[in-house]
Every structure is written in C-alpha cells, then in structure tokens.
Amino acid sequence: MTAALTCPQCTLENVYPDGANHVCADCGFEWPLHAADAEEDDDVVVKDANGNVLVDGDSVVLIKDLKVKGSSIVLKVGTKVKSIRVVGGDHDIDCKVDGVSFSLKSEFLRKA
Image 1 (cartoon, rainbow, N blue to C red):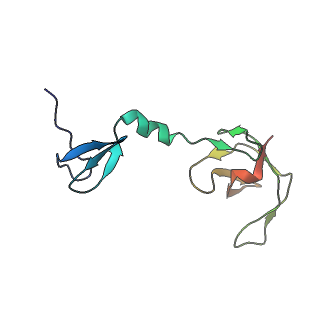
Image 2 (cartoon, rainbow, N blue to C red):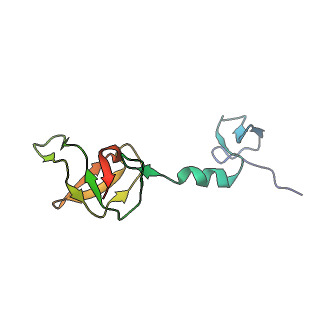
C-alpha cells in the first residue's frame, strides 16, 4: 500500500504528475518528480573568462579594470586574488583584495 502524495506547500492530496513535475491542482505548486532532480539543480558550476571551472580556494587574476560602485576604488587589471569562494547569484565570487571584501563576476576573472 502506497501513501498518498501530498503537496509540500498546501499539504492537500489533489496532486498529479505532469511531465517531469508533480502539480498540485489546488494551489498550483510544482516540484520535481524525483528528489535527485532537485539536488542536481543545486550544483553551481562557475567558469572563468576562459572556460576553466572555478572552485573554492582557487587563485584568480582580474582581466579588466573594475570600478567599485559607491567608491573611488578601481581594481586594476592583473591583480591576483587568492582564496576565492564560489557563491550563487549574479556576482558569483566572494573574495578579499587588500583586506576589503568584494563580490565579483567570474566573467572578469581568469584562473591563475
């Protein structure tokens, strides 16, 4: 005997499969059929300007002068940044340059 599938959002049992997702007919919430599909989406692959995969702890070099918003600071081309941290979002690299924390886009970096 199988347990009835319930919606994780509204907890009602009026759920049906639709393609690769389950759909709740009551609230319209959708989620993947298999839990493994959801876990695969969490893996973030960040690549530098040359297509090399970046991971936590890598060292990178800036390939372009970057102006810092709200400041007169300019990060110069060729600046080496050690011990980066890969995060999600638009600015996908967290790092420190001269003791100041920055969030950078990987498209302006190359692996050192």
